[in-house]
Image 1 (tube, one colour):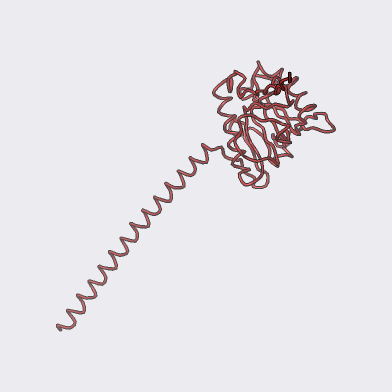
Image 2 (cartoon, rainbow, N blue to C red):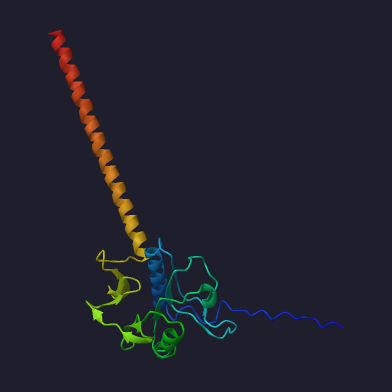
Length: 237
């Protein structure tokens, strides 16, 4: 009797760990702003920006996962993903930002820091507490010879060599600064507001120009009428 060949069981990598996306509205809004700001900044480059996405880093072991709040990977496609499997992608994150709180700071500074350095080899790792409840509330690390070295503040900002940007507080909120343009990158809400303002100003200018054009046309018509009247009088005389 022939022995039946059984196929290997399919390993499932869950898309959710059952944990909330963010602890507070402020954490969630900042996470979304950072992701969308970076996506817009790298819109023309082969760079994948995401966050709060389960990342599996050991093939065959669904328990080996982490979900960075914000992460950036260079050299992979921008396609939407349900999960990030490092062995399939061939690349691990180059940049990670964790939005911390008193309840997560210890894990961010210990387990995740060790994981990002020794297993995922994340080139730059940043931790930021939007409420300022922990000390330090903002810190960054750069991977040098397999070990994280703290990044020094310059002009109250942390330089990211990976992103060619700087991270710092602007208006009391963590923002990204472009040293080439010497401008803060605008999150999507601000870009939309400024676009609306520009459109409104353009409409107002168009209306003003239309009124001015109508006034000029009216003055021209009045002058032509006066000329005709003067010519008529001249012919009568």
